[in-house]
Length: 417
Ligand SMILES: *Cc1c(COP(=O)(O)O)cnc(C)c1O
Image (cartoon, rainbow, N blue to C red; front, side):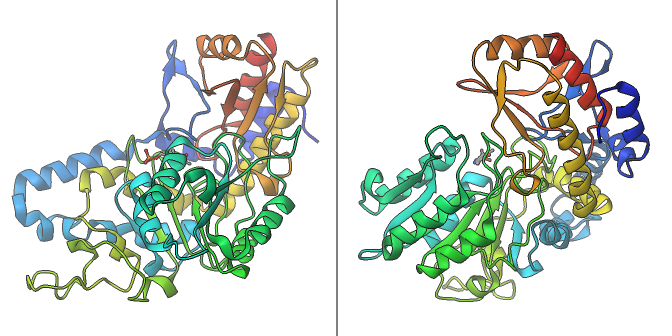
């Protein structure tokens, strides 16, 4: 149904209902024109509104000093609550189940302190082999903290011989096999390297069947794929906001905890003043009284400057809507896959699953050789993609700001190389 021509790509842009959203972002330049930016999976682009929204907070700080906590137009005292509803919608949760706070790896540790409580025979964690380094370090040090040997306590799932992605059946089988030795299944929602989207609902059900918790690192899933964390009964999740969520380098992280855990005072959480019940927070009395919501994992007061871009970006997501974004995403990435198939004698293999229910927008190209040279040649011609050792180029056409023309131009440059 697709066609490999510039006119065709432009015709898809003309009928794209989300086309105008590109206008809301600052696109990096290459030789005085827009670069082909396919790195929204690594660092999302800056919404144009950020600079004046940031200036507004600076002005309020100058004008009010400490009074800004209550007097600023967006009072800092409760700044994070400005977008709780949007965040909840984005991950398919209730408003009492999410909070924007801390950063991803920190949240991973905080949540594991609540949900990885090894006891007796039940102490193992199941995760994907070759997970993002930060997640590997987090799991390793968590099990060490309780005196376990990571080689014993961490079960790593690898793809079958000759495959690049995990078989869903193999995940189910591994969970069942681990049985009551399993304390926690902790996986990415979308694998950062292959772009494989996991069936979080099935994995959660399987974990619960053996009495384990299921948690997900959604760094590559949030803002990329549809999520229904509450309905899937996911126990907890965390994510960062600077990838698909365009909230700036090192932007604030996000936390989801299912309400039946958040409201349960016997679920342990480390205390901080912002996680404490608001009525008693300033009474200076002894005794941490966690809020019965995900906000009890928040700890510190809101990093307002760090949240300005998050606020702006979630506003854009709300206007565009995840359903519409997902629809465009499937067409846009589908077009990219179609174009790649038009190139003869490909020097690479697409390792991302083709099935749209098993991926988001990212496509990973595994090179047999000359991957690095190809990547550098792409960069020289204004393509901003991403290189992952040992030999993968990741390309993420993001439906909020990438066009079908971008994808077509990428194909032409790649074919030329
Ligand atoms: C991007 C990413 C991180 C980064 O962690 P920070 O704490 O935000 O630096 C961690 N895990 C995964 C899976 C990621 O994709």
